[in-house]
Image 1: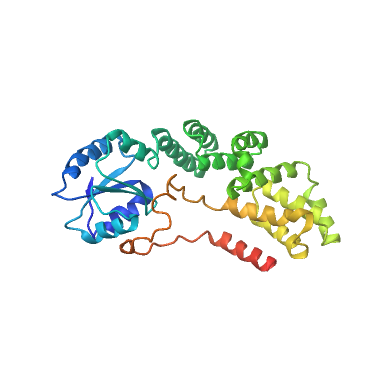
Image 2: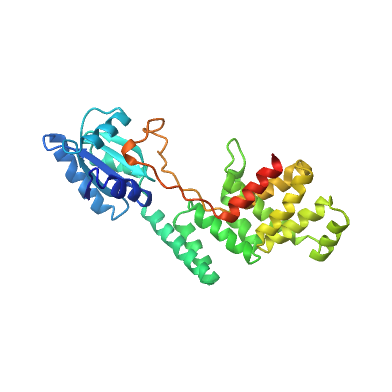
Length: 321
C-alpha cells in the first residue's frame, strides 16, 4: 500500500499503473464507511499477492486529486475507489461494498494467477529466443498458452518462431483458435496480419526458384505474379523489408491488382513487425469513457516505432497517395 500525494501522483500512480493495476482508495479520517472498507482492501491486496497494488489518498489533505477524480466520475461522496490501468483511471465504485462485490470489481481489471504466469513464461521465451535457444522458447510459449489461451502475444510469438523454422503446419494449428477473429463484423488487424503471414509462407512452398523469378521480373517489370511469388519467398526467409520492396513495386504500378494483394500483404508485414499494442482493461471503456482526463496526470512520453517500420509506412503512404 502507498499514500498518494501531488508529489508522487505521476510516478507512483500514473506510471506504475502501466505495469500493474492500482486501486486508489479515496478516504478521510471523519468517514465511518472508509474505516470499514480500508481493512478489507488491505486484506485483498495481500491475498492477491502482487496482482494489484492498493494506493490511498486522503481527501482532506489532497483535495486536488480527490476533487478531480470525483468530478471525472460524477461522484460526490466517499469512500470512492478508482482503478488505474495503463496509466489511466478506467473504473470505480462508491461506498463500503461487501468483499464479494469488491472481488467482482477486481475480476474485471486484475489479471488471474494463470495470466500472470503466462506473461512470465512469455518473457522467458523472448529471452530464450534472443539467446538462440529456440527449443526452450517454443516450450515456454506453449506453456504460456496452456496457462492462458487468451495470451495473444505468446500465440503470435510462437507462430513467428514456427514459421521462421519452416513449421507451417504447426503455425496453422496455433493460429486456428483465433482465426475467426480475422474476419466478421469487426476484424482484428493483428489477427488478420498473422493469417496473411501464414498464407504468404504457404504460398512460398509452391513458388518458382528465386533466380527464375528474378529473370521473369527483369524481362517484364509488370510480371506481378512473379513479384508476389518472390515477395512470398522472401517473407518465408524472414527478409521482410526486401519482400516489402517487391510489394511496393506492384503497388506503385497497380494498386488494385489481384484484390489489392500486394497492399494487404505489405500492411500485414508492418503489423507483424510492430510491437503488440498494450492490452486494455476489459472495462476500460466503462465508467470513465468520454470523461476528461486528469489534468494533474500531465503528459506522457509516446514511444516511437522502430525507424525501419516508420520508413516503410512512409513509403506505402507515398505510393498510395
